[in-house]
Length: 316
Image (cartoon, rainbow, N blue to C red):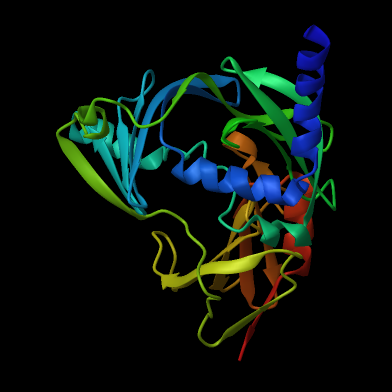
């Protein structure tokens, strides 16, 4: 009897292994966006730790969720399908909450994970346990290891829901981490948990979803790093700038960077090296002809340096 049970247990990983790694990753992406649940998770970045409660329900394909901060600035983020609204107890907290956007863990993967194949490989790691649930590590490794960060995701063996996600550099050093500490699958029994509790609100727009290719009128950007595609383009006036600034936003499904283009000469005191920011974010600028290019993104220093060295913006 015990030998038979042991055979069954040994067979579970083999059954899971029969599914391709990319197929499992796609299931994890869908579960990360749609799986009904109630849970508590932590967000760790730059030696700072914040905790959130998350409640999510799904009804007829429509998803509603609310997440609230347990520590830090009091705020809530309510999602109705793709519409996001931030709530806070007073205008000051709302202003701070707006500047400190909440990432939508466990939705750490793009809608179409196949698009990651251009820049990443995926392999299975070891079996593990997170929030009292068995999970399988999936390792997304950048093909150019120094130009992008890597991502490790431990997905629930029962639902494929990401239970833990770790962004790391080429040496394995932690950049950012999310992890459930408590989790119950299924919609919360109390519908009131999905409704905001704070008075002040601010619409944040829509969740980033797959969009058709965007075009920038009159401009041709060349030298974009492999695997990145244009998500958004806008021309805007920024404080302290004499001319409109062209703003391009690119993503490869995991990493994202903005390219700002403005006419004129760079300041003589401009530092051409990368300036590091929180959560692996970096900034670098360069003079190219009669333009100043600035790249801001969640890429390691060599990735930002490579991007600024190859990017060119040509008027059509």
